[in-house]
Image (cartoon, rainbow, N blue to C red; front, side, top):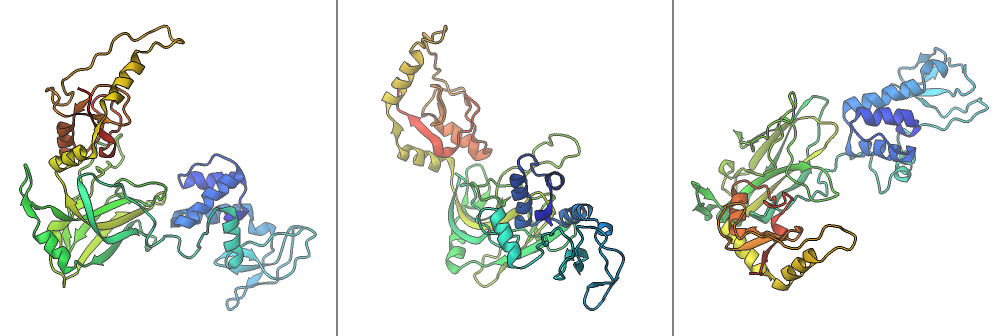
Length: 398
């Protein structure tokens, strides 16, 4: 059906599904077929059928005939249009039958199943496309690495949250078990974290994200999410203030620690139940990891071990900023850099900045890591650009 659509019908379909509807016909067709590849909701399926019925109305193709209940074929059909072909019924929609048409104009058959459709979809879209598995059970999803956690093991690899029926509210569950070694790792890691109560530093972590494979994904939660671990309700990360009224607040992009709710036993499996609201425009994945929680002090030691930037780099940066630009009427004759950290308003002890920053001003590495340990934002306090842990460097210029 989608392969027979014109540009206007493809635009209507993509607009209905919340996708980009601009571009050439081939681009529109690729996006429309992508809806089939990732699995479209019943509402989108109905829209496809509606657009198809508008394109090929039945009264233009056949006169009234009788449908055999045993074979599903139309009898007593007479053609009334020069483009008409005899039809058979497949799933309630008219499709061309094998009967040859007397029309002087050949009408290409609709591809509803079989290898012809596979070949057509493969030629219209790059890569292979399966009609039978629209939701990959284990998509090739990569999650962003969290600086304050070292991953020890993958307990449940990223798995698609698939709608099992046409209901708005969906529910699925999965089971995982711990090995004796993992149970020992968790049980022996109970410790007093700075400023917190007793907790496990080796944790079982539940993470949700979008089923996108183009780049590592941040934690992203499905709408109206509810998680139960071994029949116990699990608290979720807090929400950001909604951008406008009537919009569901977005949850903070953080993992869920389910360690307090699991069975610390190698013989008793753990059951996780996930319920959410269907979102036909997005697909989500869920995964479970065994991780070791780190502190800001340990991250600071790793940052120091990574090395200190050569002072010559900062000297070269200063010379570059003081060099006059012949095309500019304004020249920089002096640079002012504060020895006070913009975060804590105290003298810098470990001057640090991101490799992506172009300014000379530094911030204190220890204080920056402590603040992100409490509330991970990873934003440079000088230029307000992203400054993740991976691009931090200690400045050796004193």
